[in-house]
Picture (tube, rainbow, N blue to C red):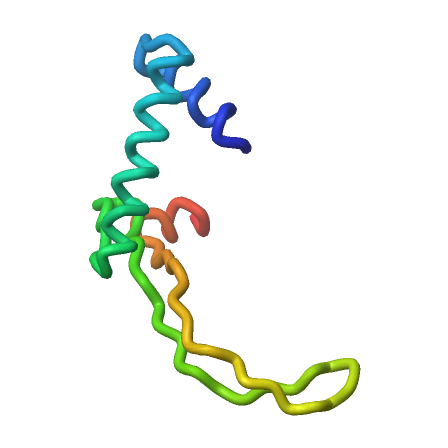
Length: 91
């Protein structure tokens, strides 16, 4: 399912136009992204929690040459599913 597909489903279920649903979806994504960029987390009851994972700097190897390389520290978005969502996926 793409973002447009999701917006269309939201529009159908809530009596909105597809454009309005896309704007709401874009706003929600922007708010979540901004919160994660600020180092926070977003918890949606019954769905899950979005957070930030911190990856430390480490040494790696180039798979083609075997030469050691430095992999810098980074941050990544993570998602933890709520138990209600897990139960729905595994009845």
